[in-house]
Image (cartoon, rainbow, N blue to C red):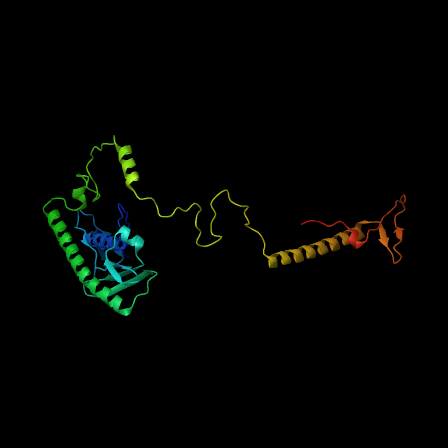
Length: 288
């Protein structure tokens, strides 16, 4: 029997480089977590409550920490820990996960930039330094938390709850004067330089991808030329099959049969009626 542990993350604020922040939060949560102590005797498994035995930590062999590198101008410039605005204009992103023993756990590259071997080696050296610094900070935070708990105090997230300091960007309420907002906006517009070029119609870089306005008739479901030919052939085959079926029904139910001279022969003894024999091409077509 084994323990099944699930780790969920909820983003309160995102200002860029969420991969590194999520990796740090995840590994710290696993190191901080304590599971109930158990004992196994044969087939009998006993799970102890926190009152009976102190919970025990997980067996964490190493801490993989992610370090992100943003590239600009086709790899000419390198930036560590990009913000949200920097991520909007970057050409590519390289994420290296490494532990403090300089062991690379994973590498992920994305974007439209092609990296050279020297660039990747340079990023790995920078990542090794950053991972050592972050791992040391994590271990100090865990030691301070354990020390505070032994003394009976609160530390970290538990300390932030009563003070309403859940997010780092929380600000106290303040009054804002909005009396002259329209005047200030008019002055800003008057001082602003007009745009160099005014584009009246929308520009579509790829023709046929979009349309702005009332729109045109939808062509969804229209058949190609080859598909139209196949549809005509299928329709002809279905009409021929319908004619054969109708011909068989006529021969089985009618009291008149056709001879070589196309003269009708009455088989029944009832009152004779005028019977018109239609040629195959004159039979009405059945629609699908």
